Length: 292
Ligand code: C2E
Ligand code: MG
Ligand code: MG
Ligand code: MG
Image (cartoon, rainbow, N blue to C red; front, side, top):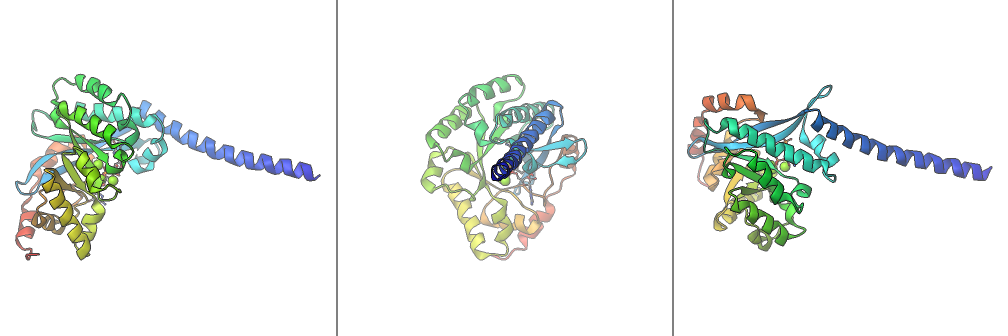
C-alpha cells in the first residue's frame, strides 16, 4: 500500500516536471515557427540630433505579428529563445530585414544609420563576423557604415578580449557599435576602456529619474562626460517629454530617442513621419531652462 502511494507520488511529480519542460519546449517551437511563417516584423524608432533637429537614423525593434494575439513585443518572446540557437536565426533575419529596408531608404536618407540589437549568444558565436560579412555581401548597395550593432554591456562581461576582437573586426568593415542600456550592468571603468564602442546609450531608467532625483541627474551628467572623455558619442533613450530632451541638451547630450520624439513604427510610416517632424518645441523648452 505504502509502496504504491510512493510510486504514484513519484509519477505525479514526474508528470508535472515533464509538463513544464514540454511547455517550455512548445513555446520555443512556437517562436521558431513564427520566424518560419514570416510573422516577425521590424518597427523603427527615430534617433534625433537635438541640436540640428535632424533625424540621424533608426533603431530596428522586433515585433511578432501573432495571428491571434496581435502585435507582441520582444520581451514576451525573445527571453524564451535567448539560450537556444533560435536567437541566432532570428538575429540573422533581423539583420537581413534591416539591410533590405536600408536599401530602400538609401536614396532618401543616405546619411542614416540603422541600429540592430544583437543578443549575447549570437554575438559571441565563433562565426559571428564571418556570417555577418556574408549577410552584408547580399546587399552590395548598402555601405556597412549604415549599420550599427547595439549590444548590452553585460553581454561582453564574460570575455572582454574576445568581444573586443569581434568589435574591432566588425569596425574594420565600417560597422559601428553602441553599448545599450548603459549604466544598468556591472561594468567597471577599466572594462569600458577596453571596449571600442562608438556610442554609449544611457538607459531610460536614468532619463526617467533625472528630473525628479538630483542624484540621477548627476549620474546622467557623469555618464555624458565619461563618454566625451573616451571619445564616444552619447545617446539618451526613453526621452518621453520635451523637458527630458531639454535637460539632456543642457547636460551636453546631443542625441535622443524616445516616445517624446516618436514611438517605434512600421517601416512604411517612417519617411512620411520624418517629413512632418518638427523639433522646434524641444528648442523652445531648452531655451527656457534655468542654469543647473
Ligand atoms: P532596447 O534595445 O533598450 O530598446 C528600447 C526599448 O524601449 C524598446 O522596447 C522601445 O520601444 C522602448 N522605448 C523607446 N522609447 C521609449 C520611451 O520613451 N519610453 C518607454 N517607456 N519605452 C521606450 P521594445 O521594442 O519592447 O524592446 C525591448 C528590448 O527588446 C530592447 O531594448 C532590446 O533589448 C530587445 N530587442 C528588441 N528588438 C530586438 C532584436 O531585434 N534583437 C534582439 N536580440 N533584441 C531585441
Ligand atoms: Mg537597443
Ligand atoms: Mg536600451
Ligand atoms: Mg533595454
